[in-house]
Length: 390
Image (tube, rainbow, N blue to C red; front, side, top):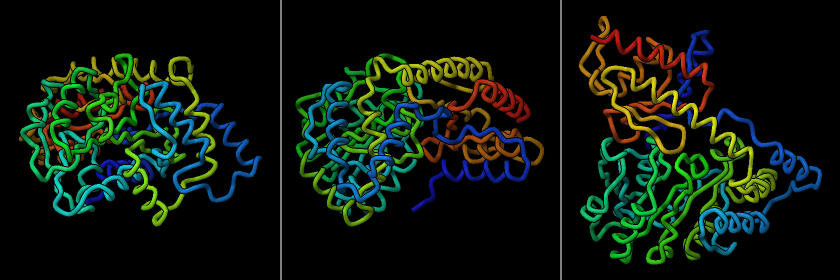
């Protein structure tokens, strides 16, 4: 298993900062907001009410009920509490799902670019990642034709995120419908829909592939509270899955970690009952992210040789910087995205993540989950550093 490149770059940036270097980190996918006050108060009350003992493995009953309410309200999806498994972050949810579903040799279709951990999680289960390359010109979205061409008798699962990490793009209802029609033609094929960035959506209503009747019994929806509620440290993720898959994940979790933190669970009940259509906390965070997105987009478009699309959600840009490959600054040659990421870190003091970690070596990932002042300075430094490459 390879180490997580995003965490590695974040650790490198922290190390340089500890040495006194002036580093602006655009590498980590973490909102720079505080958890809403109502959620924090719910956690404090849980402590006072002595929710300090082992919870049920798949999560407290009231939390799983609240998650069902959230899916019904926000996504038009119907689940029972028995179909919900709460874990220590969406990453654990994805890991357990793949362990329960994938046998050695099973193929898993992963459109590129993808979140860095997908491929390693599949490899640990001895599955075979099958990459389907998407294009910047198509907003990095897989087409039904590409998907159909990638499916073989060994294909067991499709994994994708919408809104996407690392591209910030998202699938429309029509695009998801077309994908669902392909999946429906293959009886043994499941879909993992990673919707962790659901509430950071600049186009309006979030769309879930689980809404389509022809595939709803083969869709596993992954979500959590880290991104949309600024609760990264609370470590709560969950799946909504067909009952047999939920039971398998529950069994595995019972042997590996058991239930996640009782206090975090009680706080998450509050989060799940917050209506995103009326919550000022969610709406304010989304508005600020959109303002930053628009600013960063203009600044990236102003850098010669950089190709970029306007993200529709999440808080990332995934610009194509390959026009600078083969160029040098002094004795330093930039040949690929890893070279570029380290060049920008060491020469400009800006931490990004190499696109190769996400399956596309032409690009780098920038997170705009930091202040406007820091973003302006980071983009200024990037522009100057790229101009020095000849």
